[in-house]
Amino acid sequence: MSAETSKKTVGKTGNRVVAAVCLAFFTGMIGMAYAAVPLYKMFCQATGYGGTTQRVEKQYAGRVLDREITVRFDANIAGVPWEFQPVQRSMTMKIGQTVQAHYQATNKFDRPVTGRATFNVQPELAGPYFNKVECFCFTDTTLKPGETLDMPVLFYVDPDIVNVPELKDVKTITLSYTMFPVEKTKPVASSGPAQGNSKTVSDTEGNLGG
Image 1 (cartoon, helix red, strand yellow):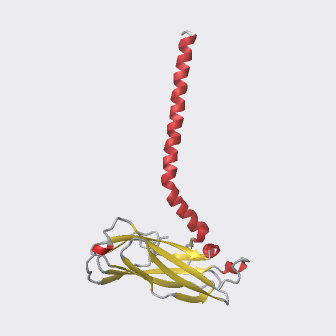
Image 2 (image 1 turned 60 degrees about the horizontal axis):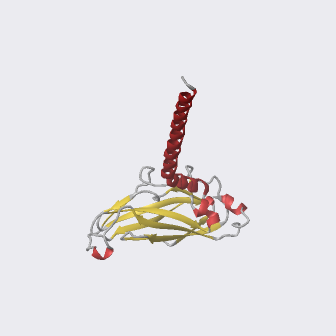
Image 3 (image 1 turned 180 degrees about the vertical axis):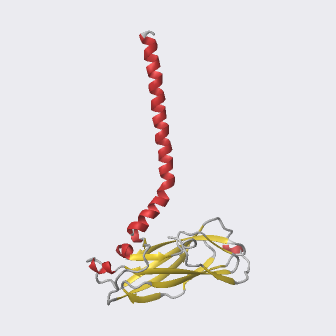
């Protein structure tokens, strides 16, 4: 084999290697893009970043302080033709005590609509210390026309919150949910009257989100 032929062979092999590396890099970038959203959600739930509450497996804090804190409940809709609100606007409990609150959603549209809730906590620094045991967030929920859904939230405030200088004197935390549409809906103005009925989300891992 001549030197010139050998150089051409080496050149072709090098081009194939470069092409393979570029393809693998491109495929990896696409995979990372698709994984970014769920990974970010998992990161927020694990750390409480940006006021995101943590999801915990244990139902109790292990200790309850002789100090009360008030949790306010807020509800918003973003393009969903539902009525969505907390059953009660606030609740006062001892720090470390596990309690349950309820939200309620009613579909005012003339056809089934699917929604999904996101949430955050204010002040943001309290996010890592607001522990949800069970919740309906990040779960796709479909309501029939006129259907009403009870949506429970089981949570506690971690006693370690009193060890944080910026939070040691905090007396009120706000838990806020925003309901988004999962599928495109018709304009709310075109909706017709709906017959009412109701149901309750069961407190199980299969039905409750993170």
